[in-house]
Image (cartoon, rainbow, N blue to C red; front, side):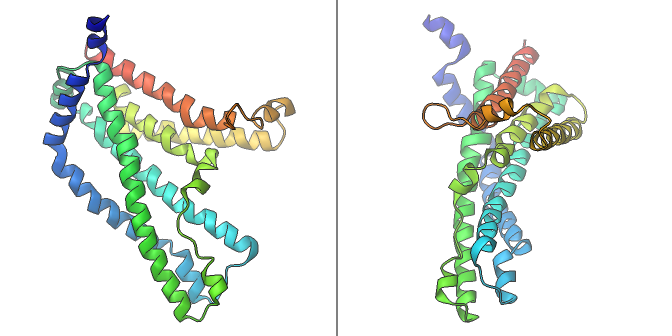
Length: 269
């Protein structure tokens, strides 16, 4: 049993694989941190809703503040999706080059171990690093905006409504947040499916899939789908888990991960 397990997954080999990856790419990983910070900063400068509202002398009241708050969290999500897709492309896009592809496939590790190391870097590690960096930059910018609001004479009660990023607000919208694991998983898989123009083809397929998904949502809103089907997604499973959240956040991405693992296994045989 143990020998069979080692043929699929060995923690010793996996550890060596992580050490090898870090030894070869540590400069790139450390360089990525200031790059992410710069991109987040540019994003704040380009979409500085709070600063614009303060300069216009408007206060945040009622529904206006609520809409702003959700838009604030959407900045975090937009950056997360874009940068995680870039990270996924960089992880496997080297397979488009014959020499690098051969080196990757000849590594003394199983398909499972090769899948795990790339999955860990693209999902939990990148997600954690990005979230921490965004949180830090968000607090820096929002603190500056609060000072601007006070200097502009905005009432204290209104200044207190200028909020910091709240990730819970993002997670409560599965139709938007699910774009992160789904699109990232698609671009992680793309280079393993297509030998040439993998990124371009994957972008086309992802855009087609996104359009189809939006069209499906539109169909549901216009009652083209039976009411019984729509109501099925309004129920919650034990533990308060919504079926649509489970489907979008875990089931669909997991299917792409399985296909990615199968493609690695096929190509290294």
